Length: 354
Ligand code: FA5
Image 1 (cartoon, helix red, strand yellow):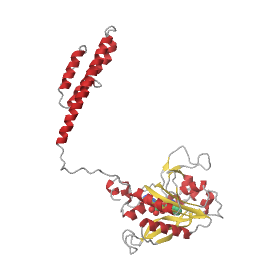
Image 2: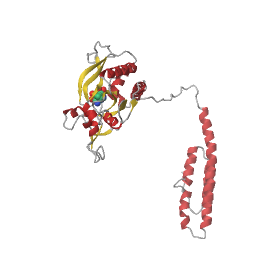
Image 3: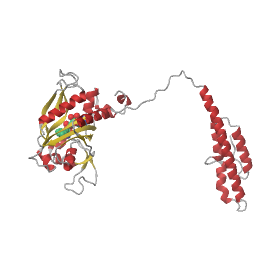
Image 4: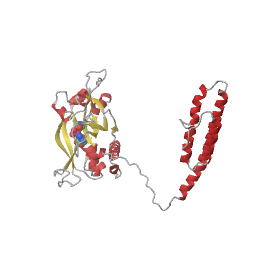
């Protein structure tokens, strides 16, 4: 072990350091010597601190000696480090076994939800739909009220909500002010888009939605939806049926039977659930489609006139359809993934398969 030296004998310390460097056998040993003399708490660094306490007459000589010693030790250590590194690399090389199997480099993969979202965007884009994004922190006016769901409306219970405690309320400067929340669906973007655009238009809105509900194989508290909205003078249910049929056929790459089932959403009238013939059993009935032969893909309908009124459209002139599909549901069907919770499990084995 290296012993601490007296502070008044710099030349001896220097010689001692240089001779230890000269006979060092490895870079590890060299680093130990280096830090003992020149490291942050090394002997010579400590001497630097004491320069100010030295008698003024002798101070310049004392300082010069220290600096010269530091420089000499530093240069000797650099040279030696170079020599030792060469030897160490050479020794390693000679023990390199070229018959050993290599270590595979792991490649990254796109997440199945990203793949599905990109495919959906591509399909709708090719049918002339624009792609819009919107805020995940929403105000209750856009998420509920403007969608014809006033505060006392029982339908609010369809969407279990994460409310946000905040002093700020939505629609700053404009009435009505309303509380903030994590959007429970992508439908508030219908309102935001129509507030700033005039028909005709057709858009889709991919994005995250949040619901305060227990998770199971088909429900997450954070999931993704694809909202669709097409508005013009004579947009009809027939247009909707054509668009979704074309979408599903491109998405699944085969002929698809669809069915519109009567349903209820406060912001559409009439409203429907969109089902497709089960892809797993071709409609014969299996455990995946609960023996019904049909798979539910999402909600849709003709935009309610109260929604058009909320964005100040002329309800006598415009009509349109809207839909909201679950992205996870589409990915599960396409890739035959049995549980929605796998998407956020962080398990790389899932994404490696696609
Ligand atoms: C809605 O959210 C409506 N906004 C859809 C809509 C848009 C109707 C436009 C009419 C016009 P719903 O709550 O049914 O509807 O959700 C739509 C889809 O989102 C569901 O079919 C399902 O695929 C997906 N989804 C809903 N909740 C969850 C959840 N907890 N986890 C995973 N996916 C979910």
